[in-house]
Length: 262
Ligand SMILES: [Zn+2]
Figure 1 (tube, rainbow, N blue to C red):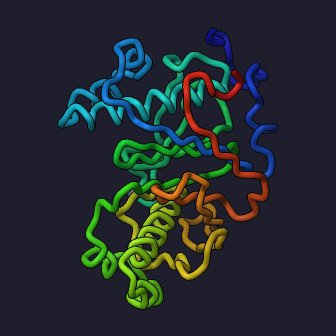
Figure 2 (tube, helix red, strand yellow; figure 1 turned 30 degrees about the vertical axis):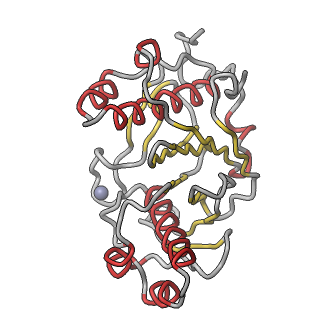
Figure 3 (cartoon, helix red, strand yellow; figure 1 turned 135 degrees about the horizontal axis):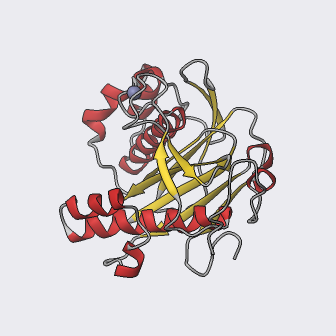
């Protein structure tokens, strides 16, 4: 049950984040949304999250948001040995404009060095977890944007040239998604949201990961290791970790019977 009396400075009784995530090691959790989320699962969400579920148009959009957020709470609670409903999640300020609405997500309670990032796409979700370092993740099941229209607005000249050099449509789509997910993962790791000038972030799509990508807001990290997590051939994903993160990246498939600390 939840450690209600936990205060700052006390030892967490669950799997200790600083050991699990030594040297910037990261865990990736891949989840699939369900058609309907049970009332007892919805009860794990915060009032703000439940409100968001109510406001989402369409049953599947609402269920997919709810499933991802229930899964995120269960996983984070597993690492922290607390109750998923007791977790308080919030956001830290955007390092660029200090807007708390789109800053990086954070665990507000219990006190922890655990950091995480969540991405959802077309009935799938991907959660990246580490400790003491910023982390970003992006998942794309299907491009939500038109490559022909979006690439010139978001890609560098070198990236555009590489994209246009692809003659096969499948290869072009793969290059587009590699660029897009890498850029989005970096921007999410920095915590500035998609208002960032994507054209300034060179992500080297001609190279398979890991690649180093420069982008940041001082005094935060300015260089990231980008890699493709092992999530199967149908999904495109990118993980951004701080430069110098040498710890292993482990991928897990989410299930209620497969949670950290279980
Ligand atoms: Zn901002």
